Amino acid sequence: MTMTKKNLILILMVIIITIIPLIVVKNSEFGGADGAAEEMITEIQPNYEPWFNSIWEPPGGETESLLFALQAAIGTGIIAYYFGYQKGKKQTR
Amino acid sequence: MKKKLYVLLSALFSFLIVLLAPREAYAMHIMEGFLPPMWAAIWFVVSIPVLLHGVKSIKKLTDENPNIKMLLALCGAFAFVLSAMKLPSVTGSSSHPTGVGLGAILFGPSATSILGLIVLLFQAILLAHGGISTLGANVFSMGIAGPIVSYLAFRTLNKSGASKGVSVFIAAALGNLITYIVTSIQLGLAFPGEVGIMASIVKFLGIFAVTQVPLAISEGLLTVVIYNLLTKYNENELNELSLIREVKS
Image (tube, rainbow over all chains, first blue to last red):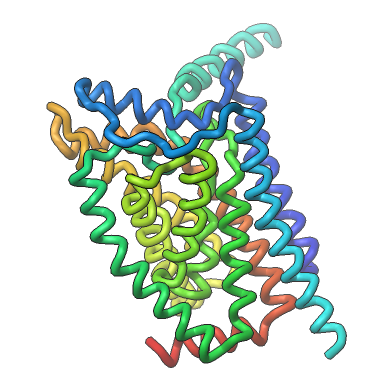
């Protein structure tokens, strides 16, 4: 089996693993829910007050998704550059 | 007959859903302000020496071998991408992979702690995800504990003759799980409540134990994908790197 085929199968597996919960679990928003930990903390220690607040918070979901997309885009750009560079280098050798 | 089977199946199915669905897990990092000052300080004290060692080891590696810089950037980029992806899990909540397994396997844990720090800083400052006050604790779980386990797992498996693919997969998946386990321990230690430290740790573990397993598998698979690409296009550099590391250790 070629490397590309192997990798495609691996990626397909990741996609399947990711989709299954979306199909199987109904009535869920799949919240990232840092909130649940806060709830758990206040449940265990009801008098706990966070002593430090975020310096800055994205004003809303749109800006947050912008920043997450930016994070992924920066990473992907570097990865693509790297493999493009390596492939070119290998071919000219 | 068919109808009976149908009823039985749907009953089983809804039972499973009830069992799995309604618990929400938290994203991996401890939120801003959610560790008491003492614990926040303790984790900074634990993490800072490792980070300093990481700076040194990166400096040494890149001084001896300027070519390796790009590979290091690739590892950082990989962590950037993976930790931006909040994947849905069977428990009905989402969490994200860490992506630091690759760095740990190639560069060792102390260099990887710097990569973890960069990702965590980005998320803490721009996304209010994790936090500055909890940065020490989060660097320890994601940038230090996970990578140490990934690194050791990879070395052990690789030496015992397991294939590269299997070694990389298990190392990365295990590192992901360990990160979450350490986060629970950190929260349990800081919030023993009336139930005690152990019971509290178990409670925090319980929130994400199931959530994290499929994500760990995904992280393992994706790390193998990128490792495969590296071996295809860049075998020399990989060998060079493992040679340097062998000499050093």
